[in-house]
Structure formats: C-alpha cells, structure tokens
Amino acid sequence: MSRIPKRVAERYMRTVPKFERVLKAAQDRDITEADTVLITQDMLAEVFGFDKYQDITAEYAIRGTHCDLAIKVDEKIQYLIEVKAIGLTLKENHLRQAVDYGSKEGVQWVILTNGIIWELYRILFEKPIDYQLVCAFNFLQLNPRKAEDQEKLFLLSKKGLKKKAREDYYERVQSLNRFVIGAIVLSKPIVTAIRRDVRKLSSGIKVSVSEIERILRNEVLKRDVIEGEDASKAANIVKRVSRTATRRPRGGKPKETVSPEGSTTSESAELLK
Image 1 (cartoon, rainbow, N blue to C red):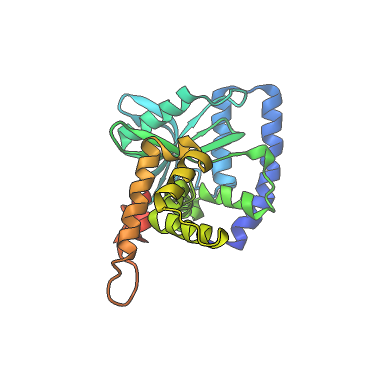
Image 2 (image 1 turned 90 degrees about the vertical axis):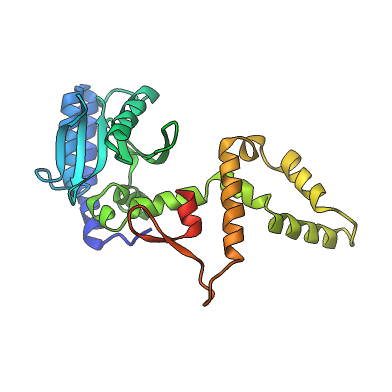
C-alpha cells in the first residue's frame, strides 16, 4: 500500500468526525436519496479530496439513463457512483444497476453507497460481465487515526488515484484470496515439501505425493476452495507463475509486463487481474 501523505491523514482526522455527525443526523431524519446524494458529494470533496466543481459530475448520462455521480480526473471517468437513500439497505439489485452502468460506459470501478456503507467494486469485462468486491466499510465505524481505516479511505481518494492505491490493493486482495492459497497448497512444490516433512516425522515411512494430495483435498481443505471455476482459475495462475519463475531472463529478475493502466507489474500480478 502506498504511503498516505501526512496532509491527507490530517484531513481524515478533521473531516471524518464532522461527517459522522452529519450522517447520524441524516439517518435520524431518514432523508431521501436526493439529499443523500448531496451529502455524498460533500464527502467526496471534503474527505476524499476531489474538486467539487471539476471532478464530480451529478446525473452522469449513460445511454438514455443516468448514474447518480461520476468522478472524472485527467479526462477519464475513474468511478461511477450509485447512491441510495441513507436508510436503505444496499442490495444485489442496486449493485447490478451500478455494474450495468459501468459495463455500458467501459468504466472498471464502481462505488455503491448510502452515505454510511461504502462498497468498492471492480468490473471484470468477461463473458458474461462479472464483478468483484474489493473493499467495503461503514463510515460511522471508522477511526481516522487508525492506519487500517485511513487505508480504506485512501483507496477512494483523489490522491490515492495518483498513487494507484486501488490497483495495488486489488492486487493484494487477489493474491491473498482463498482460491489462490488453496491452489498454492496443492501445487507440486508444496505437496513435495509436505511429503518430505511427513517422512521425517514418521521415521522415513513411505508416503507418495498422490497420497499427500488426496489427504489435502479430502480432509484438510474445504471443497469450495478447490472446486469450481474460481478454483480452476487460481490453479492455472499458480501453474503459469511457477513456470515463469523457472524461466528467469538473464540477470535473474522476474519477467515483467505492462498492465492496462500502463504500470509495470510482475507476471503474477498481471495474471491476477
């Protein structure tokens, strides 16, 4: 995660308590969606650092319909934001609406919020279109002095965009998901290492790699971690990265590729996107 500038952290400590009071009062009054949009605009400006008049667009037009808010920085739409009334529980159909907007507009990142709950999603332009939750938080439960909570705010901030905070965070989330960890545990080098240690513990008793793998699959790992489409994708990622690691170019450095956003990443990171 990129280092959060001191001035940004100080802004969080100043503005988060202010909007906690605003949101609690709005929640008590059960304000409308339109009023929630107004508060959200103020939060985007004061907490997240966007220019209210240059970066934030209300009622952004998308092929005959409108998204509540859009964030445009450096001539590019960075976020589409769907806002619901503060007293409304965010639901799957609300998310699908936001994802539909993003897929039509070719925008990869969408935010769903009711002012209190904030959810950041990355649209996966596959067939069919899919999406993945990257980060979610309750604004009323944030402690602006905690590094962990500052990081969540930084993901959505203007300064975070410049430091590619959301891309770095997404890469980390992908690398640490349960399917990838499960695939790594079942990879040949790890299974072989486990077999070696089991033999040491059992005075050299004969045990095969296939036996170790069978125990891992049937008795150690949960089935939903090692079966299904997500598990297959993770297994392919691990296999491809393992092959890449054994084919290092001269100089001993891992092969690098260029991501769609133009930043250089390792091949393992590129595969995870």
